[in-house]
Every structure is written in structure tokens, then in C-alpha cells.
Length: 314
Ligand code: SIN
Image (cartoon, rainbow, N blue to C red; front, side):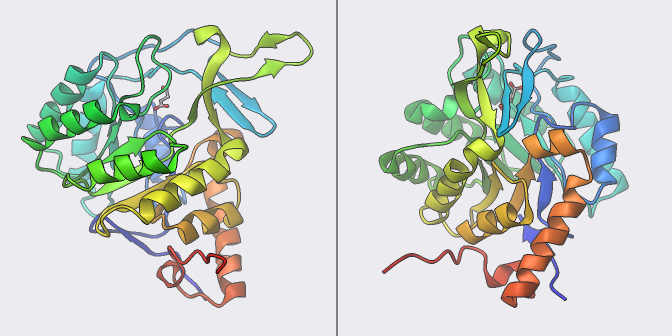
């Protein structure tokens, strides 16, 4: 019987499935539900320094092929998630999870937030979200290559705990080359690829209107729409990054087959956003069952036997 045991950043997980930040992880109550679910681990809502109510509603809509959102980083503030993370580490040191941190104000808030974490008792994994597309008037940090390099230089000068970065999707092979070349210069432990495809537009055919209020209807696209882009990003970074930088594959995971494809491209952990929002916590059990069935059919006992082994046509 195959098993889904996964090793990631020096921790061991029952399976590689997690929520994607933003879905079911805003409050401690939701985080507790995730921690008690069949997911292998979880990530918290990307925190800004101060609590935020986020963009006006409607700001998240499920679509038949995915979702569109412009949440605008609603969250309870870094100290809320950090205190909870410290308590969790004390109470269950073997249960690794990821604390996600973002910035609303821009460059300096990223640095300040990482300083707060460095000076805290928390020693676990941190995801630095460089890719939120929904802050009106603010660009996605990781589309600015020079600023990303400068930011990582500034942060790595003082930050000594394990962290990774959440990236937006890239669409050009030269951009994969360029971002991988930058990331390879820093002691990051992982990347998370991809965040939503930023600034898509969905129109309600009955009313000829956009479906979300912020930014004139422009929002991040997730779900089925984004799987080919997500797979391309996971694969492109798997083949370009240092072998010690692990990959969280996020985007378009609705089924065991989607999970299998992300692993084949080189992902180690897998995050589920839109489908978790649509289906609820039982998605984790269903996808594990489907993935185990695929592995059994193909004769694999462990994920390591096929991770990254995507075949090309010669
Ligand atoms: C949001 O809160 O707007 C979504 C966060 C993200 O896409 O990083």
C-alpha cells in the first residue's frame, strides 16, 4: 500500500496537502480546524503589521472554472498569528506549519515584519508573501526583480530562521531564469508557486457587470483556470533552483491527478485554495484517496519515487 509521508524543510508530514493562505486560516478557530483536519499541514493568512479589514465586498466569487478575488489582505495582524504560532510550537513541537507574512505598506513593512519574527520565540517556517495582487496602488513585489533582490539582501542580513517566498506566476522563460538566479543567491528554504494570476477580469453575462467590487472588478484568478500556469512555474523553478530549495506547488489542484502532476513537476508540498473554499475540509481526504489510487495503479510506494520525474519528448 503506498503512503504519502512527506519530508519538507527538515520536518515530516503525513501527507503533502495544505490549505493555500487566505482560505480557512483567518482566525485561530479556523486554524485549529485545519490543524485537526486530514491536511498534512497548514499555512496562516498572510499577516500585515496591523490588522486589516481588507477591500470592500463583494471581493471573492467562486466561478465554474475557479475563482476571482480581491481580498486586500484582511487579517488579524502579525502579533495575532505570531502569538498563536508560538503557542502551537510549544504545545506540539512536532507539528510543523507555516506562518505567512505580507506587507500592505510596501518594502519597509516587509523588513519590519521579518524583524518582529526574528526577535520572537517562533522558530518555525515562515512564508514571505511577495505576490499579493490585491492592494490598490501597490505592485506585486516579486515582479520587480531589483527590489526583490534588495529586499532579500536586507532581510537575510538579520533573519536567521527558516523561510521561503511566495511567488506570483511568471510567463516568460527569461523571467524564470532571472528570478531563479536571484533566489539561488539567498539561504531561502522553499518557494511557494504560484499565487493567483493577478488582475484577471470576470464578467457576469446576464448583467454585463464585473463580479467583484474592488479595483473595478480586477482580481486574482485561481482554480482550474490556473493549473497549466502553476505546473509550468513549479517545473521551471524545479529545474532552475538549487536542489536544497524545496517547492510548494499551488494552483489548480482539484483532484488527485492534479496533485500528482504538481509532484511530477517537482513540488514537495501542495496547497489548495479555491477547491478548499468550494468543498470544505473534506477535500483533503478525497484528494489523498485519489492520489493513493494513482500511485497504486502506477506501482509507486512513495512520492519520492516519482517527484520531479516529468518525462519530456525526445
Ligand atoms: C488577498 O488578501 O488579497 C490575497 C492575498 C494574496 O493573494 O496574496
